[in-house]
Image (cartoon, rainbow, N blue to C red; front, side):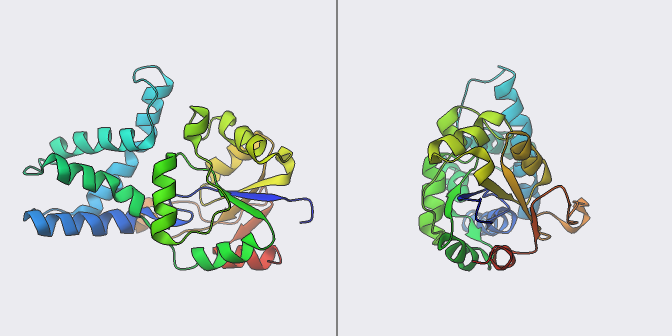
Length: 235
């Protein structure tokens, strides 16, 4: 892959375990506030509200807002829906910022450090700059730089995000490869001129979610972990 200069990474689900992390933080909140609830259900519902919230911005129903603001909007709606009461504003803000504290998958840091020796590595996430910065600090993620969709006032899978990342890194689009656990994200990156590497994350979603984890010949690489990708790329 001498013709690849940079790897840009989807983060939620690809590099970090959002479902396990949010569930764990919810349980801690429930213990502090004596709230009995299925916090895995909260994590799944919170994430499920993500794409519809972005669509409300795209349609003009909501003004542009970063992911922290969208997460808080979804959280407030879910607290009402699930009838979770007794949380202070400080509690809600701390729980909303659980997305800043997501834990990496066990192979992520080791794989990224290997890939960094051979390629420029950067985020390409809908997460806002402060969220991604805090997450990297908390999780020891060794990015060369952080690129957020916030910089372009667009969310993935809008083409402006992929093309904007390549432009900011000053590499031709076909010399930049998106690494992601989500096939729709990868296809959008390919349509925007980038290469694509799929990393399967079977534990990202509940077992009954029926997510397609099979290799796809349309992608440049298919891997089972970040370290497997590093092996394939000779890093």
